[in-house]
Length: 112
Length: 108
Image 1 (cartoon, each protein chain N blue to C red):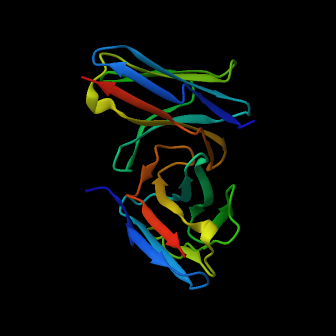
Image 2 (cartoon, chains in turn red, yellow):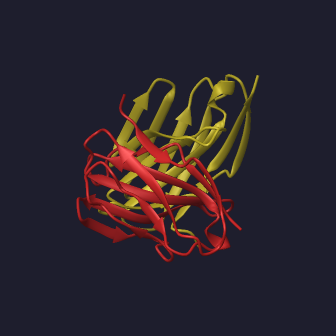
């Protein structure tokens, strides 16, 4: 089954404790993105990747890092999480730069 | 002012009604997506448009590039259509900018 998976789905952590949210797709897609969704602000793009080792900033990259060492994986790293990073995070992939987006199930993060 | 504006923000309809959700944008785009977010939070892509019109079942999406406007229509609406509908524009490459979404509730 074609899918995008994210782990963990739910995470409660404390300020400053490094965490990684994993994202994996099994569709051999070149393009992958991370988004965060906040009430009243909607979805905003954090980072995106056009291929292995090629990444670029979206609208809200501050406080986040990404890496794309393999085509299927695109982890999101929060080196020192802060409460303002409490949000719902989505990973997505697509076959083309503006192709149909396939979303993961979301990761709900709470930073205390 | 947001680059992508959706209207209405909230919409309540009776089952069977024809529904229109609008999306206007202020920047040049290469494509536009319509997404559906279920009450459980999952997001599904409905359409990707770069011109004209697309239809899938009871859903129709149109885009007018010159007027920087797109519409999503739902014919014969059903309670299972209740969801948040999100417009997203592709500004360049893989850069996406989203509208805030339209909360649709269809009552039986």
